[in-house]
Length: 94
Image (cartoon, rainbow, N blue to C red; front, side):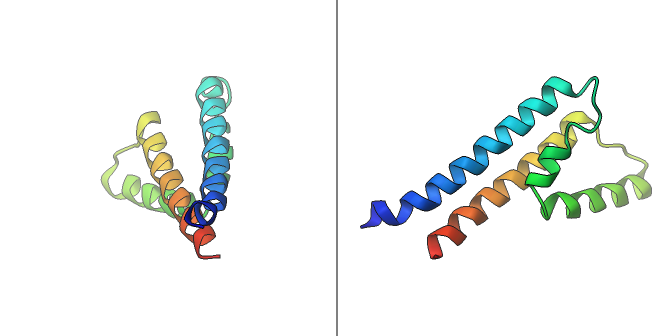
């Protein structure tokens, strides 16, 4: 019973993580030539990527510190983790 209850949330979370891995792979492979390659990750991590983008812009305006490639990817990775946990627990409740 417990295995069956955790199967659907695990599958949904795994599919989401796989999509995010593909999006990150695309972004890493195309970053030098395509500045919009992170758009797929941003779409997958909504709404947190939108909030993070606003906060990053606010921090950059106030402190004049510019987040680089690695910093932005770490922030998007945190958004992926938050969404994965939310997908798992919401699917588990249903």
